Image 1 (cartoon, rainbow, N blue to C red):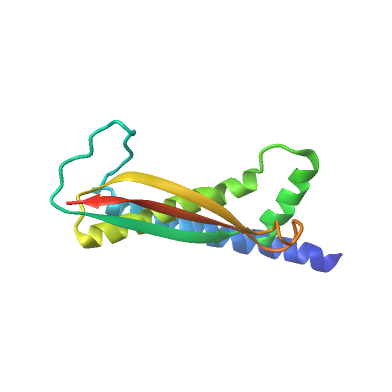
Image 2: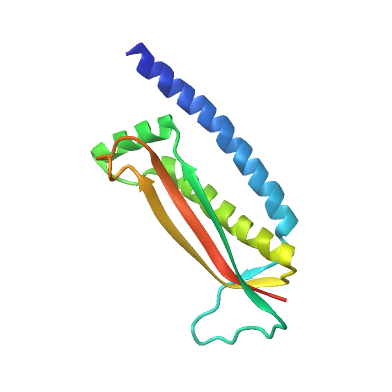
Length: 145
């Protein structure tokens, strides 16, 4: 029993520190890339004129720490929002968009249009809800210059 509590505490504290560090890095990189807007158009809207265009994609896999997996299993008993996983999805979306934008900026894009996001969960279902839980997020769009 004591091992379980120790693992839970280590998972909580290490996970919190790493998550804060990741958010700090994301915010710093978002400030550096804010000059390149990302735009999503509807099916009947005209795309801006461009001399060149290229497809860019950014992907990331973010996993849950031991504490979040334990907390989500408790939430599954009663149902409702699984708040502990919301930060994983937020970090995944923001990181994938940043990676896409950074590639587009390196190419010389002035904006990225028709940006789309795709997600997939990794693990957890195949193991009957036990073991690794991670989410993959892919952001893709057309960079124009």
